[in-house]
Length: 230
Image 1 (cartoon, rainbow, N blue to C red):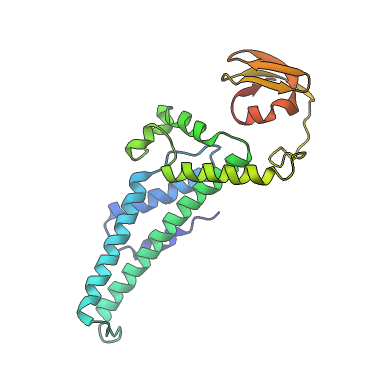
Image 2: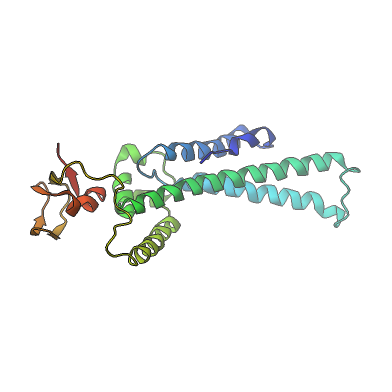
């Protein structure tokens, strides 16, 4: 998805610091497209851009208030120009917000389709100090997702599960490429308990290794419980 919000930069009537805020949001969206994980939600930047939109809307209302609905742009060109710039700035900010959240939503859906435990991965990500730098809001220490994103992931996962349930013989989220090896060596990265395979039950405890059929553990590999060796 293209991030087109920067095209509105020349219309901004605010300070360079304000310009930097929305530019930072666009940069975060662009960076997210090239990552395999979802970086921490930029709460403070989103709040700053939203606050600017409210301030601009308030300025527009104050400029138009004396005219009581009878504003003539041709008669008051200075005010008309100010209104136009404010309007374009609000549109620019809206496009920034939409682009940022759409990029993150696309990444969340991709992770869900890949079978990843998104909420668990987001918690691991913010526990890495290098990855958590720059996160806004006090909730960043717990999850890289906003509360709204966590709820979206839960509901989207439920929808996907219901959709897949119509075709129990087909794994719609499985890889489209056939496995090169029927059996593989795996190392357990996190305790996963007992699982049933075609050849019986095995208990997955951390740091243990197994030689298993790839089809039995593909989902666990995608979820980060197992690591494929070799």
